[in-house]
Length: 368
Ligand SMILES: CC(=O)N[C@@H]1[C@@H](OP(=O)(O)OP(=O)(O)OC[C@H]2O[C@@H](n3ccc(=O)[nH]c3=O)[C@H](O)[C@@H]2O)O[C@H](CO)[C@@H](O)[C@@H]1O
Image (tube, rainbow, N blue to C red; front, side, top):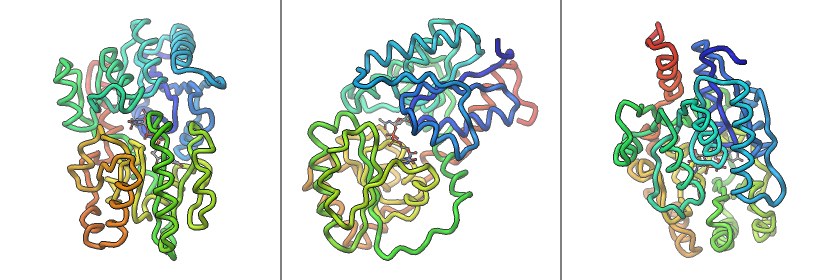
């Protein structure tokens, strides 16, 4: 049995690890007992992401199996998490974002009557197929959660429109900005680059079949300009053959998933980002790095309002014309470089920890 007031944090993937690491540290700073449970959805990457924050998981459920369907992962994750929760009876369970692990954690906790706090609550694309399964997962988690930590006023408005009462929502900023600031403060000064860096990442499930060849083709054409370097860390969830056309380009560098600090160092020095990632849109916006979002939509209108990102869809021609403009027109590029605080101010985890402290103790933290 864990001590009264213990908080169990369920983490499946790399982005959950990055976005929950500041929360683990903030809860510990308030002397709240925390246990970190990895589901193993990203077997190596979640551990890799926690390490720079000095966090080791208390348990790893190792749930991934080759060829496992989403339904099977969901079923096995609910089962395994429920067993752990029943044994340890934490006072709260925290899940983050929109993964299958987060949904399974919320279902398991709810079934055992343990309240769920949802970090990064209220993001919506309003299309259950885009991104899939993430929009479905986060919508369902909202029905299961007791406390909703919305990163922005826009996310809060989405939750209110779904009937979530105001007192169950706290607008905190996104914890990714906390992780970013903490990491930037540990980095050495960036070395000067001979050529401008185009940093790209790709992994969205709904993009894999049809859109990836177009996006990779566009990246190969950009790399062949001769005046930029293209850097693309692979995502282990993507079939390796997806990247093959880029392997022939001398100016394109395909690398294994990068440790978070190394990735942030590359991002901070990038001239242009091309990505289907959610978290990287947020980090690039906080840094003021122009970003082309290779999706049909974004559930982060804040990065568009901030002027740091454009949604360009996944056709090669659209990606190329937007990238060419930003690489060839300094004014167009400059107009997208204002670092934004709309995503967060770096204090989200502290707000989350204080609210949970108050929920657990019935009074605010004495230092509040
Ligand atoms: C639909 C959607 O938007 N869903 C998001 C999704 O995650 P995502 O799309 O952000 O996922 P990725 O792109 O894999 O991760 C990005 C992170 O990884 C770091 N990074 C990257 C490459 C590398 O080589 N080394 C690294 O360290 C990088 O700096 C960044 O922090 O799930 C999250 C969890 O619930 C949600 O929060 C979030 O809504």
